[in-house]
Length: 285
Image 1 (cartoon, rainbow, N blue to C red):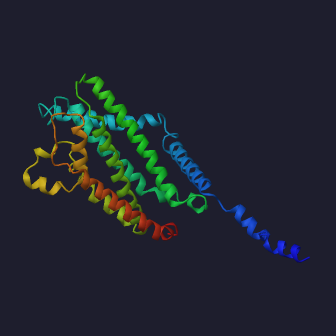
Image 2 (image 1 turned 180 degrees about the vertical axis):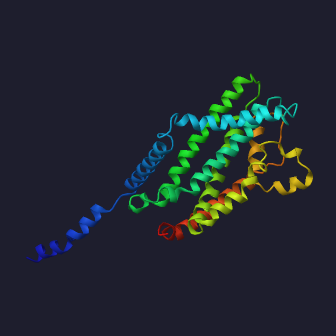
């Protein structure tokens, strides 16, 4: 009798029914990751259908718009200037500057409006603000990379250039442009959500950005005073870095990868902290 009681006391106590049910319903980490990936994919498909599926041509317009801009720049400046600042092809010179700027601009603009765009869906517990931001970032990054590859490849084919492409440098410039676009975009997402007038203010502040980012010229063409001021524009570093990947004789000694990366990571970290703190206030506005 004593042995049976001791054996019963040594046996582990069975978990209660509520505890067992709670343990069974607790989502596992891999299930959470799969659910987040599925949500992000669904948001990307939703935006693809709304942005490109309702207009004739769809994705074709995403390629035609930057191609037309590059052609107009090339034709316009070829009538005024005999040769570009680098090489002999206006098409290649402006494509290497415009496409890296366009990649940053599309990512930062789309990311900054991610919460407003997906606000009705964020009422569902399965969709988070981070899902909305990542969906727009990934979609615009993939679209920008595809457009860059198509147009750069087309330009190199048309001009029959013997340019020695340094692919790792060009890829690095595009990755940094994506990081900078994400950092600026998520900071603006917070500011636009808390202060709606910031959207108008930012559009006014950045209106001269196209002229100040080295799309139409190289850093060395600027006077010393302009160089000292515009050096702090990260996009000027990105355009210079991109062109070093296509012009072997161009060194772009002013380019600082560390500076661009530091600015991008600082804005990204600050934006994530602020969004984590104020995303409920933004959604309730």
